[in-house]
Length: 470
Image 1: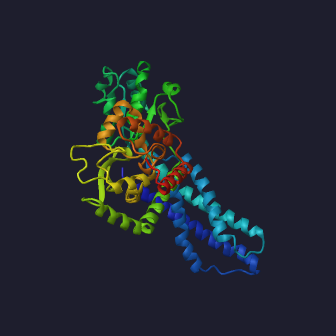
Image 2: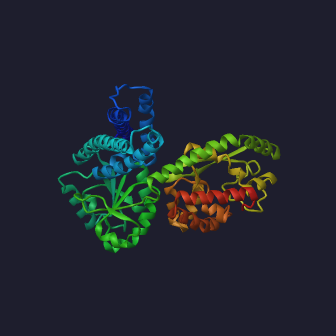
Image 3: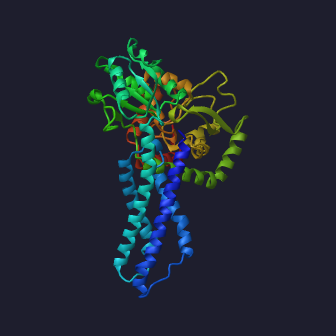
């Protein structure tokens, strides 16, 4: 599967559709509204306004689709979904274009407004839907023919797993599952080993998903093994895979669920979405805009802080360290140095309020959170977000997950410069405090929204201004 090529096909189709709709509207206005206004036929000439619109209008539509998450999971789209999403976005986009570009037109009567609005909506919705349905239908047919498949692991290896596997294989049309093997749950469920390879236990799932590019996980365990379900889901947290379960487990699952296919195998997809796609897009746009603003406008402050750090004690101005980000991916985090040189020469250590390694300037930077300002570069790169759980080192994550396996929930989102836990609790001085702070980060993820992010940012700004950070 070439995801980038498939996205490009949708981009081209959407651009052509938007251009065709704009052309249709231009010709329509020259044919009906303008003759009504002037009282005589108007020649259809492609003027400068047409060519300006031919570039900016399709660009507007592409940006709208990006914000709405239309190009995410490009091979997972279905025709009914195309119909509903295209209709809603067409209404939203057409109304925006109408009020921004068309409402100030000189017209003979308000009927011409309604005619133009209807012409733009019908042409754009029709052209876009046709283009997308062609691409989506081709993809669906390729999946049904087995030309496109998604690497899949079965969790469980007893009769239940064999039954669902045989049902999937007996379907006249492929559902896109490309089975790599299965993992055991209770140590003895290995009947499936006669059909597919045994890859390990459910505790190996994160590693298998990363090394084998797994996209689907089917949980098919016996009723006697339901006690393992929470542990299995904890292992899958933050991996980004599609999780499906058999129907008789529906009553023990929490959260929103939906049927994955009407005509396919009877599986229920667990909806792991935290926020709607458009909110994630807005959150990322906000991250980029604020980071660019901070890096440019606050550059004099960066220079002053860099000079002060350099003069305060021997060592570099910036401190970098490997942290674990979204989906468990490591990255380098940047901060202004607040400790003496080689502060961790004896191994990873957490700091405390009485830590002798912290310089006098470092204490001020920590209380005001100014030491975190270089992380705007991390946000701009996409390693972090403005708001999200604070990233930790793998050394401490290993200790935390031994006592609180649900820590893996935090890897579902980008880590942040600030967080609910950081605002409410501050810096953690030991693993116990990390686990206590964890509940605030879990609460944030469960209540994640743009509004919550704005509240956390406001409280963070107050902490910076008051210098009241812990």
